[in-house]
Length: 209
Image (tube, rainbow, N blue to C red; front, top):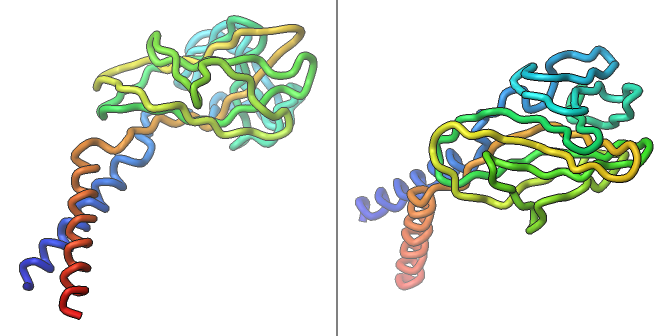
């Protein structure tokens, strides 16, 4: 009896520990909040590699409540992509099986509003509830976005945000970028083992009653 109880407790503990380990962000994105380079209340168009990101086209970093109209960013500032062909990208290392990216985004409250965006890993488009191109929903607050999971091999990959433009001066802001791994099969199996063991224990107690 003591052995069975010990096995049940161990299975549940392993399942809980393993699930928690794989459900959290991988934290392999550098400067995901775009706090570098510091803008000190202003904004800057950037070109090339700065603060872990590579900027192309009309892209850069703007401070919260600066003249570039970014509002309610996750920290002091956010990245912006203006007009078609703007991009920000970063190489990251991944060691799990499946990948998702999450971030917050906002349309600019000026001119033509938001800039349609796509997110890619290497050359693969990520989908967001089935959509591969979207425009941030609000121009007064940031909205959270999480991509659908895709299979991803271990190694170095490139995460890229690209803009498609539109009518007028269109701009979108990106902030709080994170890479997340789905629980691996071992983790899911251990969770199942823990639940089965717990169920068996409850049935045995019910039989005695």
